[in-house]
Length: 72
Image 1 (cartoon, helix red, strand yellow):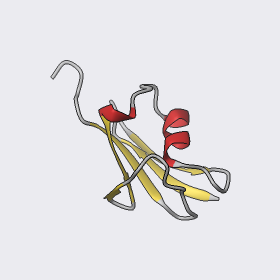
Image 2 (cartoon, one colour):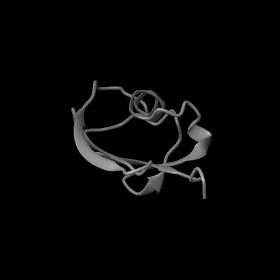
Image 3 (cartoon, helix red, strand yellow):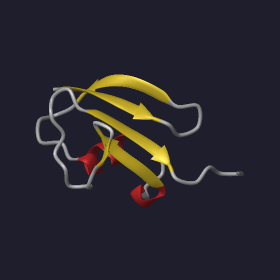
């Protein structure tokens, strides 16, 4: 299935990615973000805060935004 991933870390990017049915927020985070600590990020699905065990659905929009910017 296809979802939109928005990564606001560093220069940031947004792109559609294909994932397996049943993929959780945590699994996608581990695959997409270099920092292994999700507590350092505000993670939203369809603009709402999302729990790590939430299963993603076709057409979802997920964003990863760091809560602390290094050097700031």
